[in-house]
Structure formats: structure tokens, C-alpha cells
Image (tube, rainbow, N blue to C red; front, side, top):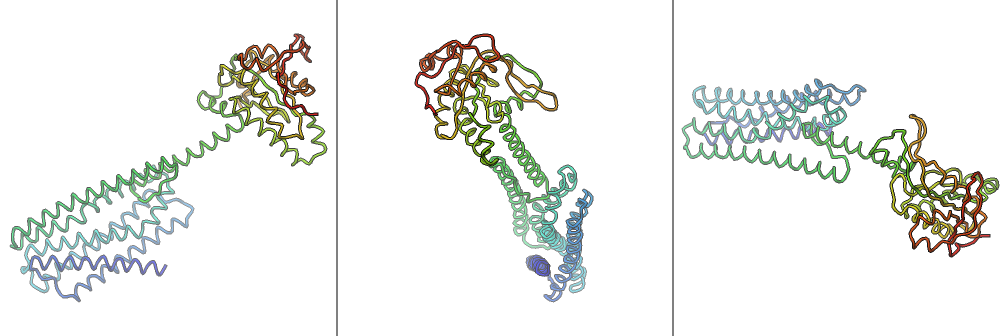
Length: 472
């Protein structure tokens, strides 16, 4: 803390020393004595000590907000901003008053005439601007923290006021002292060329300050644009409206990241297609008729394995199994509707319509058995059926899920039971194969008619022409 206070005193000393240099230069240009060096350093000491006392008191006031659980109000923040303005007015008044007093005492009230007042105004304005800038610099970290924590709308008045103060300081502090010096040169009888040159310089400084202010605003907007593109929170480096924009954009980006994370998590639980449909069209409890292909994939002997393996080993085995299933299904644009123990229900053609739903389902069945050959410790049964189902959200308003209901679902489940004992471990109904492309049909052959459990209608079986790897 002592080193920080020493830095504040050093900056105040440097800034007010520049004011001394400006006073000497102005007095020299208009031939209006600036008093002794001792007198001017006395003024510097008074200005520095006065400004330091006020700044440190305001800083302690602001730091109290950080330690308090109660957020500062808009009025509190305006009071802190007003303290910096009070410092500026106080230092400006000290400098201007002492310049006039020093001239009156040392050279007589009439010696300098109007030029003395012009110089006093120039020095006072510069001192006010410099000391206000130093006070704002010192209070900036604490104010930034408090403004950033407060809601954007809650401190709108403070930000608007800070914006006006900031703009006025940037544009007027460099230019007004030069213009006032031009007035001093004109009133002192100096050459008109010198006064005109000072006036033109002052106007040029205003233009340059305005351009710099515009460039800084453009840089702030560019940084915000980059933050939006890069999806990171922009640094809030201002208590003005620009800082409000930075803070608001940061909140929007954080909310967007959280929303995408929630959407991704939602998609992992219900499937990306279902999640996308829910976000775009809502989650009404409605259903529709769809022509789909349905596939069941079931492990053989998982109950026995669960009784002989540790729980962690069972979970690891199932995760490896389902990882292969998901990768093959995704490659063929299928939808893993649900996991039921060691069984997976997969749908092609819902919720997203697919022209080649049956072809993709049959291709997936063939590929799955080949892919699962990397897990020789397991056996599977795969059943495929196709037809018209009811697809949609089923349940209650508080809890529901997307699913498909219909005869093809039941038929695929029964085919899976038979497939566990079939040499190729894959069975489909011949009717379903008839809906596939000619190229896919050529890879399947039909067999006998069978009566599946729970169904009175006979089903003709079909399986891949080139049998998949048989497991004993």
C-alpha cells in the first residue's frame, strides 16, 4: 500500500510539474513574469498534497465496497466519479487563484492586465485536466471491478455521466489551454501571427483529440467483434458506455457458451436430431405417422456376465460395446433412440426423414457385426424390420421422451431373439429387405416363414448372403 501511495504522489508531482512548465512557458511567451521558482514549487506542493488527500480518501471509500456484501448503488458510483471532478476543480482553482495572486503581489494588479487572467485560465484548465486524469487512473481498478459486478442497467446513469466526463477531458484538456494562451497573446499586444498560430494549434489539437477518440472507439468495437468471433469474454477496460457494452457482450457470450453446453448435453441424452427438433419446434406431446426402419442390438449372455464380473468391469464392457454401436449408426445416419440395459433401439427415418432409411438400416446391421468382431468376448443378436410407426414425444408434460411405437418395433425385437442363435447373428424380415435398394437387396437372401413370439402373422426371414463372422 505504501508503494502504491508513493506511486500516486510521484505521478501527481510529475503532472503538476508539467503545469509549472506550462505556466513558465506561457508567461515567457506573453512577457508576463511567472514569479519565483520557490513560489511555484510551493504551489505544486499544495496541489499535490491536496489532490493526494482527496484521492486516498475516495479510494478508501471505494475499497469499502469491495469488502462489503452490498453492491454499490448508482448514486455511490456517481459520488466516486464526482470526487474526481471535485479534485479537478479544486486543483484548478488552486492553480488559477495563485497565478492571479502571485502576479498581483509581485508586479501589481495592473501590470499583467487581461493577459494574466488568460494565463490563469490556461494553467487552471490544464491543472484540472491533469489532476482529474490522475485521480481517474488511481480509482480506475476499483471502479472497474464494481461497475463490472453491477448489472448494466443498474448503473446506467453513472456510465452516461462518466462517458460525458471522459469525452470532455479528452477533447478539451489538450486544446483549451492552447486556445486560452492564444487569448493571452492577443491581449498582451504580442504579434498577431503568434496569437493566430496558437489558435490554429488549439483547433488542430481539438481535431486530433476527436480523431483519437474516434479511433479508440473503433478499436474498442473491433476488440468486441473479435471477442464475439473468438467466443471469449472481452476485457472491460472502461466505466463508460463502452464498458457497459463490453460487459453486456461478455454476459451474452457466457450465456451462449452455457446454452451450447446445455444443448450438447441435451443431445447426448436424447440424440442430436431429437434435441435439434425440440429446440426448433418445441416439445409438445404430439406424435406423427412415419415409415421407418427399426433395429435392435442385444448382447448375448449379459445377465450371466454381470453375475461373474465386477460392476466396474460390466460398465466398461457395455461402454465399449455401445461406443462401437454409436459410431457405426452415426456413420449411416441412424438415431440411437434408447439404451435398455444391454440392448439398443435404433431408428432410421425418424425424427429426420430419410429416403434410404431401410437401405441404411440393413447396411448398418451388416457393418455392426463386423465392427463388433473386435470384441470377441461378447456375442450379439441384431434384428431389423421396417414399416409404419407412430413417432413422437410420449409421456407427461413434466417428463417425456421421443420414441417409436408400432408393429415393426415388435417384429424387430422378436427377430433379435432369433438372431442370437442364428449363425450370422443378423436377421431381418424379407418384407423389409424388399424396401431397400437393389444393391442392398443383392446382399441378402430369404429363408423360411416363421411365427415370431407374440405375432400371429408369419414372417419370412432374411440374412446377409455372405455370412458375418460366426461366433461359437
